[in-house]
Image 1 (tube, rainbow, N blue to C red):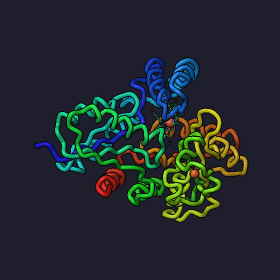
Image 2 (image 1 turned 90 degrees about the horizontal axis):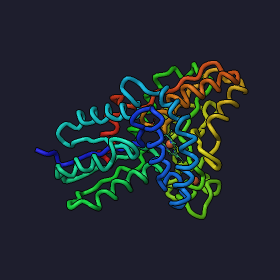
Image 3 (image 1 turned 60 degrees about the vertical axis):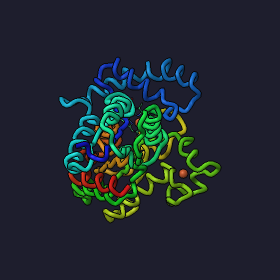
Length: 336
Ligand SMILES: C=CC1=C(C)c2cc3[nH]c(cc4nc(cc5[nH]c(cc1n2)c(C)c5CCC(=O)O)C(CCC(=O)O)=C4C)c(C)c3C=C
Ligand SMILES: [Fe+2]
Ligand SMILES: [Fe+2]
């Protein structure tokens, strides 16, 4: 008998292989999304396919070749492990599916499978702790655009941002506490960056300075990614009893000008120059290890830290399919 509910986990996506052609296709779909590169259609297509992708694809392909494992891309592999572990946890209460916003398994292909099973309810779970139009927003849009063409549209439940949920904070705090914190001089909370203009659209007419987003999270800035990231750092620091002088929040992976500051690479250099020798880096915007954690932080930032006088940069493993996270995600879904 079909369970009453389907749960659809959605992450960003990854290339099919680390070959330049596959990376090009993936980047072109990713950066061709108007919620990611927010330019009018023609300008976006010309910029993305004429300039950004041709230059970026060969460079990104080299990084993906370093990232690739016998199980393929960690983002997809960890997603599959999470899906299967959550399925086990849910027993016959729900069927759990995984789709990727860009690349495979695609959202339409998985929704076609789901449609055939006639579930009473579909729960959409974008695997992003903090809302951004370029992640949660586009994942939800893609699902709704597909559903609108179906004959039967089931009851739909959407799990929005969950960075404040105790289950997410506890699971990340558990990952961090696998490291002996007093062995480190400093902890860096490094979040995926975002163009500031994307952030400002979540509180029109007010700047983050006016709303004090780096210190306060209220109903006025409820969808501000900047405010949500700082609030996450505070929740984790509080849970782990960290003193404010022992940690910093920064933003990584910028692509162009006008992105959220401080930048993680510049922060790492300045920490090393100030005499920090042992640095622990946590990346709470990602619930699975991927290019941006394993390669950008684990290799590139580690090298940068050493070049400027640091000794040891350690990356905290992401939540992946750890038992705390599998149980935590079940709680988040059931509460939502
Ligand atoms: C304008 C460009 C981008 C925005 C905005 C953006 C936001 C954003 N992304 C993630 C999560 C991930 N991004 C990943 C890779 C990645 N991101 C961008 C660009 C933007 N991201 C690119 C071009 C790439 C591809 C890699 C590269 O060429 O650098 C990944 C990793 C995927 C993998 O295969 O491992 C994740 C995860 C978030 C959470 C976010 C906004 C909050
Ligand atoms: Fe990204
Ligand atoms: Fe803000």
